[in-house]
Image 1 (cartoon, one colour):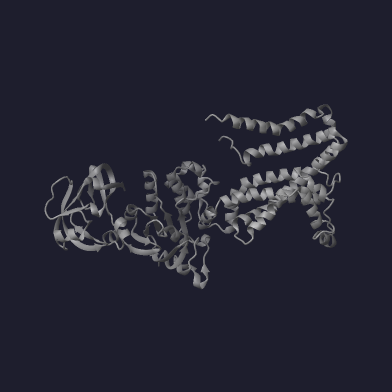
Image 2 (cartoon, chains in turn green, brown):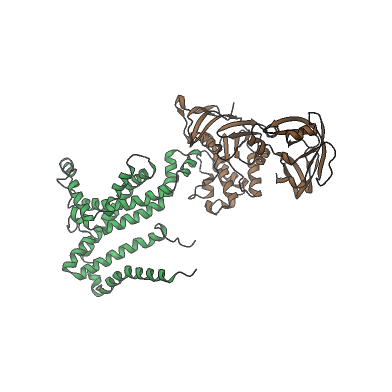
Amino acid sequence: MQPPRPILAVAAVATLFISLPVIGLLQRTPWSSLDELLSSESVIRPLLLSLLVSVIAALVVIVLGTPLAWTLARVDMPGRRVIRALVLLPMVLPPVVGGTALLFALGRRGLIGQWLDRWFGLTLPFTTLGAIVAAVFVALPFYVITVEGTLESGSDELEQMASTLGAKPTGVLRRITLPRLLPAVGAGTALAWARALGEFGATITFAGNLPGRTQTLPLATFLALESDTEEALALSLVMLAVSLAVLVPMRSRWLPGRRTEQ
Amino acid sequence: MSALHMIGTAHAGNLKLDVDLSIEPGETVALLGPNGAGKTSLLRIFTGLLPLTGGRLDLSNCAVDVPRAGVFVEPHRRPIGWVPQDRLLFPHLTVRQNVGFSPRTTRKHVDQLLEVLGIGDLADKKPDVCSGGQAQRVALARAVAANPDVLLLDEPSAALDIDSRHLIGQLLEDRGDRATLLVTHDPVEAATTADRIIVLESGHVTHSGSPVDVRTRPRTRYAASLAGLNTIAAVADNATATTSDGALVVLGEPATGPVHLVVPPVAIALHRTVPDGSPRNVWEATVAELQPAFGRVRVVLDGPLPIVAEVTPAAAEVLGLVPGARVWAAVKATEITVHPA
């Protein structure tokens, strides 16, 4: 079938729209002094911190999000729709508002935060842990919505079949449910990790902007833009490279889209 | 001693099942019934996926579902093998992993089943490359590998190729003490593979008896119209077939080898004298028994070809049909359907 020309034309415009900023970034990158910039402390520190925060946040999201997605998809309970709406809220909430909310809940004088401080001496704002909490808050819904969709579309017939063959409930979970869930877990993790890596608003509001502790790549880039354009470009390039390096290999395996030819 | 005994009730959607049936070890029973009669729901009760609301269910003489006593044995602890209608193969596992899924099986048993059912070549492939017949064989092997006391097959040979039919038939033959319950709405399959037929209609057992009993004495209109078909074992040689009683039957379609001939009772014409005209199969028979059946009369005939005919009460009157009367029976070759055995 000949693809309709208007559709191709719009698709070309959309592709251009996405790639132009990337081209703009590459074009302005100070390639000659790049080596020096990339090895400077002001780039390395936020990069390592960003990787640390986003990877730990992604792991926490898997641990918290999988049971939550399963419960939302499979357990028939009152108020399920309300809970689902609540869980998805951080997706639509402006991150700065999310950060503010976190501050009033988990901050030193917050609802829970004051007890954390008094009982455990645990303070979240202005710590790396706080940056992780902010990243988990914004990234969790992306994971839950992906995994829940898969759990809902597959009914539990295969699990029932497995049980009639003598598999105990834990065995059914281990041998049927989890392996079948793996592609969605991969896709959800990729989305959540990407969201955590790019997180800006909630982090700066809740965790602040302390170099080495809470100043992640997006924060460092924003700040550098005001003082040192070349450094901002180098930081942006690093983020672009990290994102591509992780998302491109993931895409063919886990993200939805065309399967590679078999 | 029974492999399965149920006397109880359950609800499946709008249907209320109220069933009393039992299956002996080593017995093959066909569960025959129209769509929506509750056949699949009954299997779900046996597997433990649908709980009883009253009564009791025993498997191998152990109570597994007695609601009033608070007894309920989980599906994974029941000695049941289930081959569901849509097979439900595990798509993320290979054929060998599917067959060997049960913790109750052994590697040796799995290898043996793969070979017997001719799916050894597929062992390391995923089920999505299997044809319908192959998938059915994998599902059957997986259930049998778990060494169940009772094997439940839901419409096992719907749309099966001859090879698969043959291999599955062989596996079911070699059953030992294992009881088999075969759900079908195909009366020929029921009559040819089962020791006994149980007819289920609207959630109730309306008849339980040998294939001959259900054929000659159907108790409901459904049983009369479907289970009441004559099914005759024979060996075909091109245009003719010889029955196990030695009668020669002219066929409408050429066939060879062991077959089942299916003749609807209404296709058999009865005459007081030798009929002339086109029917190729004409023989003299003795009326053994007359049964009124839902506005018709079923005439059980003795003779070279024991068979049941169905006529109107008026025709029975005119023909002077009484037990012991001699009549001529005729059936056109084209009315006989030939099924490979």
